[in-house]
Amino acid sequence: MVSIPLTPHPVDTSRIRVDIQALQPDLVEWRRQLHQRPELGFREQITATFIAQKLQEWGIEHQTGIAQTGIVAVIKGNRPGPVLGIRADMDALPIQEENDVPYRSQHDGVMHACGHDGHVTIALGTARYLSQHRPDFAGTVKIIFQPAEEGPGGAKPMIEAGVLKNPDVDAIIGLHLWNNLPLGTIGIRSGALMAAVELFNCTILGKGGHGAIPQQTIDSIVVAAQIVTMLQTIVARNVDPLESAVVTVGKLNAGTAHNVIAATAQMSGTVRYFSPQFDGFFKQRLEQIISGVCQSHGAAYSLEYYSLYPPVINDERMANLVRSVAETVIESPLGVVPECQTMGGEDMSFFLQAVPGCYFFLGSANADKDLAYPHHHPRFNFDETALGMGVEMFVRCIEKYCR
Image: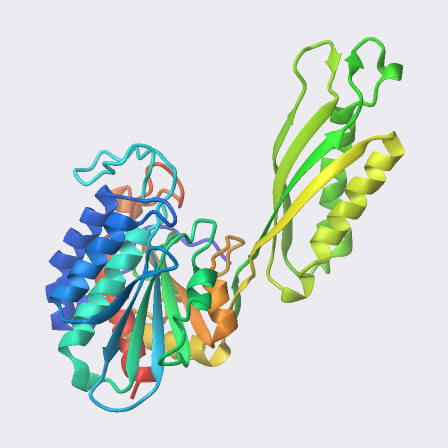
């Protein structure tokens, strides 16, 4: 994707309906209340209570305690029609906030550093609007407030708990506030939007000894260094250059002293790719390389490999629907970014495996207001104008799909 300056694109607020514009002060208030009380995955008790209280206040049917802290709201239109799911994740990150704002996190070491407070707010705003405009859409909208997206993953247990059933969801959409795009833009594409996420931990088992007598040892650091280098050949020499993939060793620990050859070395890393054809491939190839290098040095190893999330793959028909809506909300077609992709991962992928759907990025950065720090940064924040834009996007998608 071509880099886009993070100064905001013009936002034509006349394209946001009056009733949603009127919600904007509430959206900001809700988001800031949620931002002050962030919670980690499967611990979102305060957040879930806040959501449930709002739904109760508005007379919206809902179920709580799904996959521990998840909530599903059901809003029916005034005539029969399809069932559309809306997904919003609720959890925060183990990060100490550095923003100097009145609504900064009150929970030490925990922060909404990825916009999930905004996702919940947009979903609540959508629920509020729909509850007051049931004649404007057919069928049913199920709004899924999901725990633990940042890990270990709440989408799969929610699906296993039946959130896509009774009534059966025909399609699903979701959005991610995105500080890699400026306010006034939307990133949409069919096919792969976000990457699969796989993780590994490896321990090299050598033989320690004196640094001046290496012939008596098996140097785990030398073995680990060769493995790190060799792992880079997987993408360079085993993956089609027209495909995209990444193998990253993010942590390497070994040794205790200048003159001691380390007996063990531990490394951890991640693998990312877009194409489902690579499912299982990197695990196999990575172990082949580790085994081969260790064997050549007389070392042993232990390897743990986890497939966390599959790639986020959008259905073409649903992506086209969302794109057509975005072109009515965004002032200029240039604001709709067609080939937006990231090697970041998301467990929205499990919902998209179960039913056709579309996940899209809603630009939220505003460099002019110093609101352009990246996701997971201790100073992450976003332009709250995007909240009303998100509600408008969801409502228009619902009206177009559920008619």
